[in-house]
Figure (tube, rainbow, N blue to C red):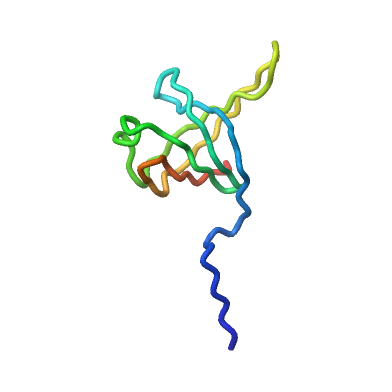
Length: 95
């Protein structure tokens, strides 16, 4: 029996990103996503915001897309899966 060892545990490919978004309930502060996949993303956060989060929390993300006079808001719920000093890993809900 052949056993495959793969240190990468993610089932989906990650893509580099530089998307700006907001967290509902955190005021007008803008945050930055540094990578994303079909199932989740990593969000860079300051220490003061990280202190208010914990694993298992559900957040509402608000992504502003568009330019000029037409702007679309995309809302998505996400689960906090891990925290580190640079930010937070989130798993997206597809509902």
